[in-house]
Length: 68
Image (cartoon, rainbow, N blue to C red; front, side, top):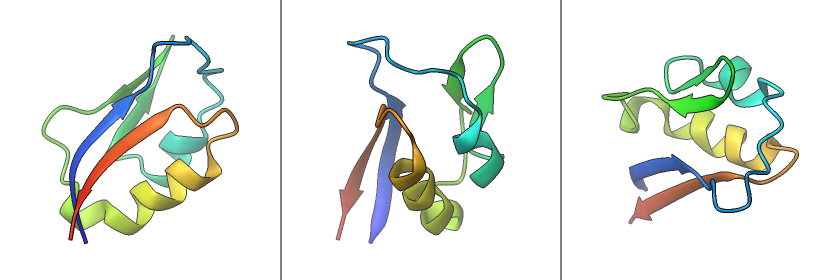
C-alpha cells in the first residue's frame, strides 16, 4: 500500500489539537495552534505511523488517500 495524500478534514473544524498524531508520526504531523501536515513529508517511509495516527485520532479528522 502506498499513501499518496494526507490531510486534515477541516470541514467540521473538529481537530482538538491533542498532539496524538504528532507524537506518533512527528515527521509527518506538526501541532502548534492547529494541526498541519508537514509539506514534503515522506508518506511511504512513514506509512505505518500515518495509519496508526489516523486510527488513534480521537476525533477522526485525518484523511488519507491510498494506492494499492
